[in-house]
Image 1 (tube, rainbow, N blue to C red):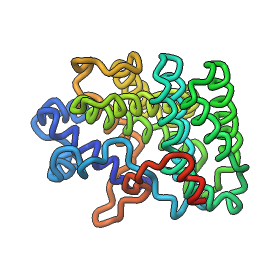
Image 2 (image 1 turned 90 degrees about the vertical axis):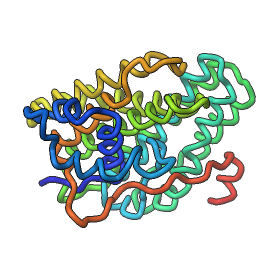
Image 3 (image 1 turned 90 degrees about the horizontal axis):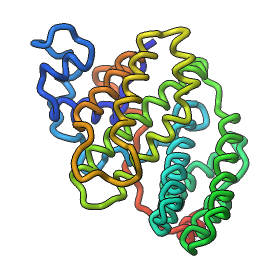
Image 4 (image 1 turned 135 degrees about the vertical axis):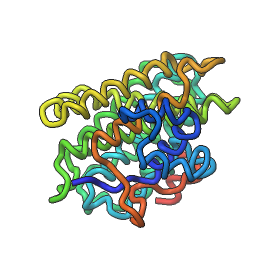
Amino acid sequence: MARRLSHRAWTTLTAAATLLPASTLALALGDGDASSPPAIVLAAAEGGEGGESGEGGEAGVDLSHVTSDPITYLTALDIIAAHYHAGLAAYRAGEHHEAGEMFAHPIAEVYVDLAEKRKDIGFADFGPQMEKASELALANADTTAVEEAAKRVFDALGDAEQKAPASSGVTPESARAEVFADMLDRAALQYNVALKSADSEPYLAGFGFLAAAKARAETVIAELSARKPDAAEAARRALDAITKAYPTIERPKDAAVPAGELLAAASRLRIALKIIPTPGGPFPGVAPRLPRLPPQTARRRR
């Protein structure tokens, strides 16, 4: 059964529609007739460039149904993982302050609200491990110490994933595929934002979302190959396209890949997975970007 398109997926389609000519976009999304782009793209194009102002790939996740929706739950975990992938890469490159901020961001953006549902879901509290990683990075600790702290967070995320809620309407394989697609969406959207920004953070965040997608890629593509070969091929192509845009954590002076191509590739995967819009339906799963608070402020909110 097809799932409703999230607001982020609409944003990806909208941005793709505005950045690519109609003929190129139609072909990129798999329509053999370049003169008539799919209706889904034309509908998205009406929204204007880039979707909601300032959203990019860093919009949060709506956790109101996290105790019963495995996709929402895994998305929250992967947003945290993405920041730790990005932060660890930054620290290894000598960008210690940026790394500390990356480690701190998901505490306020995701974990504070997720922790409120912790007992209902059954995962162990790993907030202290996240805070410790951020503190070490901001204190310019030895790289080995930061790597070990980050590993403790990744291990905790792996343990938490085992507590994903079951859903009669979503198989574990489908949940993993949708979260994989969501991370690629975020990476593509962040790349579009990064090309327009003088700040290094949007590109670094996009690098992290891609890393989170890569962490799931082998499993997801193998599962899709067994049941949806067309979606598996779309996943490979989207992953390859977006990987070319993030060769390192350093934002390139010029676009290595046209942003529209990334957005189109991410959209094609969405379509192959049959994540399509329901007319008049809500846009589940996406919340506005939350204000970023330092770790000590996040502790006070708990």
